[in-house]
Image (cartoon, rainbow, N blue to C red; front, side, top):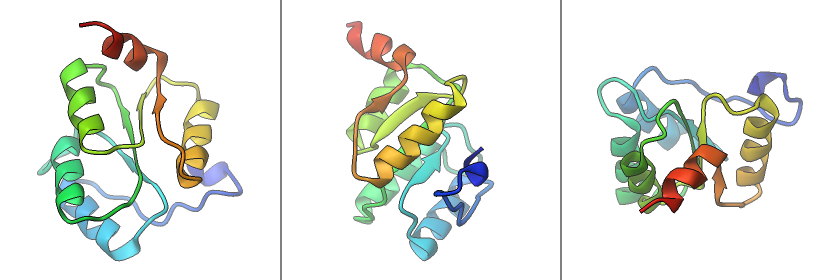
Length: 118
């Protein structure tokens, strides 16, 4: 999806959280598109470690999980957005572009609903 967008260049792809940390440290991408569910280190652990390492790479979570605790945890660790995987492809691309421009607060309608409930 992202490789089809002419103004977006995919610079790396990781199979697990440890590899994600290594690639982010090495490649310093403009945006990290991250899943919560990954082997070795999950997305929450990756966001914590990036925050602890003071790496300011903006993060967009793209996940199948609409679990309020997951969402709150990653938002507390400074992610710029949280989209659900069934989001329209154009919305995912728009979020990556927006986050690359410094925008924050990209969330799926399902995520907004979960966060609005107490």
